[in-house]
Image (cartoon, rainbow, N blue to C red; front, top):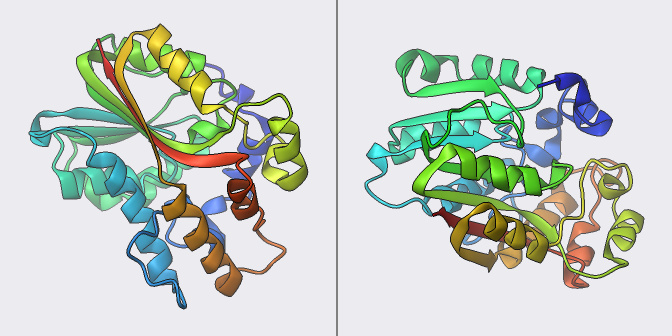
Length: 270
């Protein structure tokens, strides 16, 4: 795998710019958060961290018991805090965080040094990409991805590659924002949101992804809209805590106008 082919905006955002240091992503998990149950009267930085942890918990609860027997990989692990949470709170047999960006893997290993020392055979961080995962065929019980798939240039390769590394009966869980279908949706998102205009984010229609999963050999595919737990809370936090110039508040209007939504997708490998 040639890591020089990281898209330029992805390389910059998660390299020199280090998005995890931005106030909009306080705590370093780098996701918009699951704000269900959080008081939005005056959300604090602690609430922001809690929202990001909650999004991971929503994803990880989608894996069946007994979880202590499951070996998982996280695709697009960033600083690796979610993988460490998965091991610590859900007691999976092993979790490997995978990221295409060398700087993120370096950060993950540094930030989670204590967890790596405590669980040397159960927690790891390694380079890899969504369409070239560093695992043998049928070697994993589960694969998950939290707010990373919007950066993948296409999702067909991701679907087929996760199918390759999952054992029969293994589960894929993905949460991120997907675009609505329609010929002009991608262009309208580019007008509203700089992250789409500069190709940091890609407008992936949800129905296209579920078709990719079916074609790759997945069944029992479910899609749950959780936008109501993501966008209003994140926007409320931005309004109080983040300079207007730093992060666009147009995700909420984009959601309200039906251009995109946040989904939790699960699928089972046949």
